[in-house]
Length: 112
Length: 115
Image (cartoon, rainbow over all chains, first blue to last red; front, side):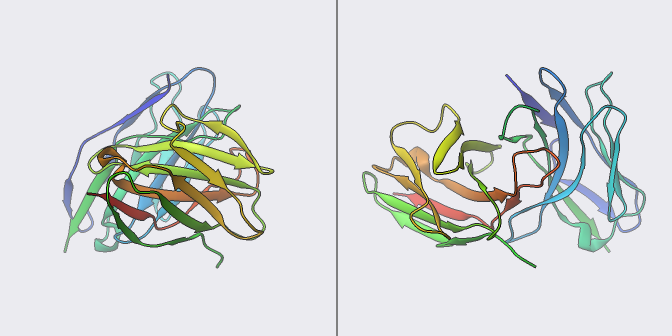
């Protein structure tokens, strides 16, 4: 079945550091890929998405590129802020389905 | 900005009791979903619902679970006889369509604790 694997956290960075959170997936066909973010006490919010190979999703300074050859969708940001502290979830969704398949989540802590 | 709401935020129940978790999806959305996250584990899909029918469900969604849209605004998840292993955070979500181009908007979750 489909699966998503992402790096375990917590990831602790200083403000303005470079962020990478790795995500790889296993799925049949050509899934769409997503990054969701969950701030404390809130629900999951879509951060960015990519629906086909080589697409780059971007939002709020975060980027991720759909790499079919390596089945990856790594999340990056050039300069993190304290306000980026949250849990980040990588997810996929098959063309023919409704369900999102999530990775385990990675907690990011950014220190001033 | 429209948002998905869920009540209650925290529900504590005894094993074997029935619970109903409530969600109010975004008003013009047509597709509704339930997910759950057991503490320390992945967010898992339970069920999707469209046009008053279940459109997809996972292996987790057995006969103990049911969903309903009792009126034009609410979407509920019922667990008939709760077990200890049902303790989890339950997230409701909704979307305009089932296209991957349409975002699933999530609520803040209901934490269910089964004693």
